[in-house]
Amino acid sequence: MPRPTKEQIDAEIVDAAAALFARYGYEHASLQQIANEVGYSKAGVLNRFSSKEALFRLALRTTQDAMSAIADAATAIPEGAERDRALFERLLEATWERPGAAALMQSLISGDPADLPPEVTEAGSALTRAFGVSAEHSPDERLARLVVAANGVQAAAMTSARREVRDQWRPHIIAAAMDTLGHHRDRPVDESQR
Image: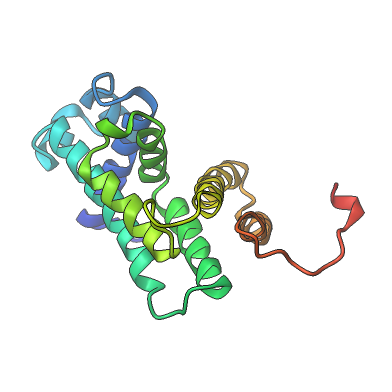
């Protein structure tokens, strides 16, 4: 097995830090907890990152970059069901790749909107714009459905990863998200799945 690169190690540390910030909040997550989570000493983490604040800022930036990449990748697809499906697929993959960043995003957006860091606001705005939704100009129903679907994709992605059923759940996660946005499938319901 090849040794991880410096970039891979740094990404692992940042994602572990993001997960701990999501779980405990910035104030209560410690550098020692982060070091323990990734199997490094506190000094080893500080050798790579100057402070807990630097790790938090990088975790926020990573989250913003991931959401922007998801949105940018779908711009070539016209708005509609095909684009929505592509965005959900990318959101699912991004959550599996960086579950800590996804957890941090979810924990921060569930708080007071006035306290949101600008990176989180921009990440959310990039994603909603990609879905053709604007908080100011879209019907409340579409925005509410998008919030439910996107959060559901992330929660289901994390659960499927913990249960080690990613491949089995993938089509169901995407189908549920598409149904939530109103892209109902024309197929009979398999009664054995109820």
